[in-house]
Image (cartoon, rainbow, N blue to C red; front, side):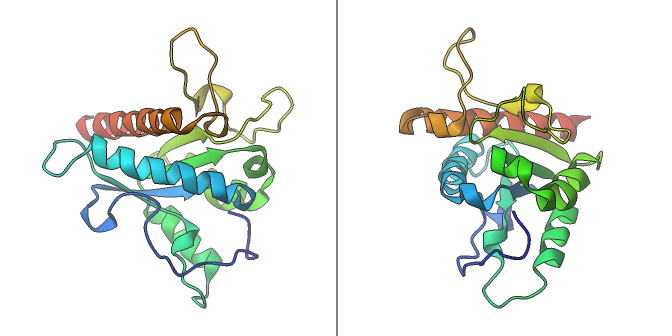
Length: 187
C-alpha cells in the first residue's frame, strides 16, 4: 500500500475470509502497481481459506484486511492502516519489486508487523524479484513462499502460474498459515 494517493473503493469486503467468524485477523500488504495480481491471489486465498477450515472444523478460521476496505470519503487513511496493523494477528506481504520500493509499506506495515513477536509474518511471492539485486529491507528470500509441483523443481511466483496452479499456490499458502496459527495456539 503506497501512501495517501490511494483511491479507496466502496466494496468494504474482507480481502479473504469472514471477519465476523474468524479466529484470527490478518493484514494484507501489497503494492498498488500489482493490485490486479493481488486481487487474483486474494480471491484464490479466500477459496483456500474456506476449504482449509470449513464450518465446524477444528482448524483456525482466518480473515484478511486490506486497504480496499476503507470507504470513499472516509478520512484518516494512515490511521486506519495503523489500526489494522495493530489489531492483526498475522501479516501477509505480497512480495514484488514494487512492494520493495515502497517506503510506506516498509515503515508503516512491514516493520511494525515484523518487529512484533506476537504477530506471524507470511511473505507470498506475488511477482518475480531478483534476490541478488533487490534491496530486501529485511525480507529473507528463504521465507518467501513460492509454489513448486515437485520437491526438486523450480519455485514459481504467483504471476508465473496458470489458473490451476494459482489455486494450488493459494492452498499451500493458507495451509502454511494454518500450520503456523495452530502451532502458536498449542504453544
